[in-house]
Length: 205
Ligand SMILES: CC(C)(COP(=O)(O)OP(=O)(O)OC[C@H]1O[C@@H](n2cnc3c(N)ncnc32)[C@H](O)[C@@H]1OP(=O)(O)O)[C@@H](O)C(=O)NCCC(=O)NCCS
Image 1 (cartoon, protein in one colour):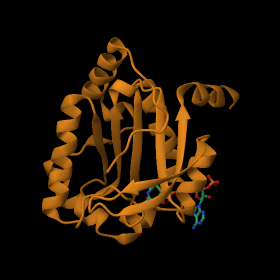
Image 2: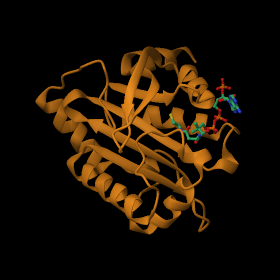
Image 3: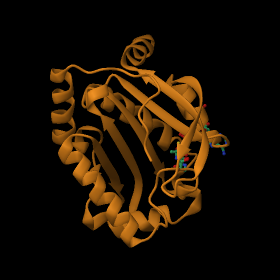
Image 4: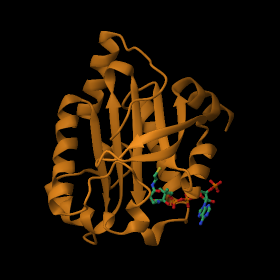
C-alpha cells in the first residue's frame, strides 16, 4: 500500500486545489510521446507485463495475485484516484505489442507530496531506459503535477533501483516497513527528494 512521505508538508488550500487540478488535467503525452493513462484496454497487456517476476517481484504495492481481476481493480482504483486528483497510472504501449512499462504516481495533495513506483519489461531492463524515464517522470511530477516532495522505496537488494535513485539525487532516509496488499511487511530502503533540491541539482548540470 502506498504510504505518504516521512516528512510532513502542509499544503495551503490553494496549493492543494492546484495540485488536484493538475493531476486531473495531466496529459501523459507531455511527459513523453506515446505515454497513455492506463485504461480497460491495457488490462491484459499489464497482466502480461507484471506476471513476469523479474518485472513485478521487487514491487511491494502491486495487486496480487497478478491476474485479470486484480489488475482491472488496480486500473479502476487509479482512474478513481485521478478523478480526485490523487493518482495516475501511466503506461507505455509497444505499438500493438503489449506494454513496455508502467508508472504509478500516488499523490497526497494536502501534503504537496507524491510517490512513484514503476517497472520496465524484462527485455528492456539494464539498458538505461528505466533510469532516463524515471528522471523525466521526477521532473514532470515537480513541474506539471506541482508537488514539492517525492518519496520512493526499494527492496533492500534491488541494485538497479538503488543506483538509479541515488544517482537522481534522492536523499536516503533510512528504511521503511512497506505494507504489501496481503498486509505482510517488505523492508525497504527509503528516500525523499524535495523540489528545492531537485532544482538545485538540475541547475548544476
Ligand atoms: C528498476 C528499473 C525501472 C530500472 O530501469 P533499467 O532500465 O533496468 O535501469 P538502468 O539501465 O537505467 O540502470 C539503472 C542503474 O542500475 C545500474 N545497473 C544496470 N544493470 C545492473 C545490474 N545488473 N546490477 C547492478 N546495477 C545495474 C545501471 O548502471 C544504472 O546505474 P548508474 O545510473 O549508476 O549507471 C527496471 O530495472 C525494472 O523495471 N526493474 C523491475 C521492477 C523494479 O525493480 N521497479 C522499481 C521498484 S523501486
